[in-house]
Image 1 (cartoon, each protein chain N blue to C red):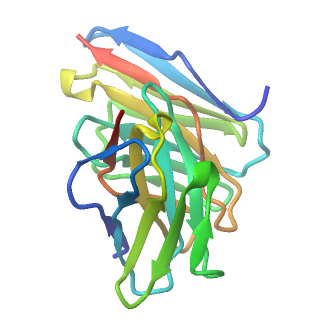
Image 2 (cartoon, rainbow over the protein chains, first blue to last red):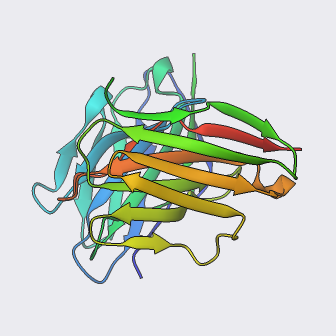
Amino acid sequence: AQSVTQLGSHVSVSEGALVLLRCNYSSSVPPYLFWYVQYPNQGLQLLLKYTSAATLVKGINGFEAEFKKSETSFHLTKPSAHMSDAAEYFCAVMIQGGSEKLVFGKGMKLTVNP
Amino acid sequence: ETGVTQTPRHLVMGMTNKKSLKCEQHLGHNAMYWYKQSAKKPLELMFVYSLEERVENNSVPSRFSPECPNSSHLFLHLHTLQPEDSALYLCASSQGGGYGYTFGSGTRLTVV
C-alpha cells in the first residue's frame, strides 16, 4: 500500500535558518507526491507536487523538494526561514486508480523563532 | 466566488442534534472529498464522490451520511454524534490528472 512517513511532529528553526522537513514514501509504483501547508484555522494549501517530471520541484513561498528514488524520500526545504512560514506541513502520496485519493502523513509543525 | 467554500465555519452541537455541513466548489472539478482532521492524528479520508465512483471509508460510523447532489455541492449530514467526533472537517475537490486537491477552510465541529 502507498503511504508516507513524517518522523517527529515538531521542528523549530531560527529566522533565516534552513528549513528541512523530511518525508519518506512507500509505493510499489512511481508515486505522485505532494506537500501541503496549513496555517492556523485554515484548510490545506498546495505547496508543490511531484508527478514524475523533474526530480527537483519548486513551489510557492520559496519552498522546494527533491524526489530521490534511491532513498524513497521527498524532503521539503527552504534556504531561509521567515516568521510567516510557521505552520503545519503535510506530505501526501496519491493512490493510483479510480478517482484521486491522497494519503497524508501525520504532519510537522514548524515553529520559527526570531 | 471561486475556490472551495465550507459552511458553517464553526458548529457546536449536542449529541442528540441533527446538523449538516455544506461544501461548494466553483472550480469545475469532478471529484469531491470529506476529510476528518483530529488532533494528533493523520488526516482521515471519509468519503469520495466522483464521476467514476463513490467511495466510503468503512471505518466511518453510520452517524455520518454524505450527499452529493451534483458535481459542485457536497454535504455531510450528522446525527447522534459523540464527543470524539469533535474535529475539523475538511472538504476538498480535484480535477484529476495528478493536480492534487483544493481544500476548503474547514468546519470546526464541537460535540457537547
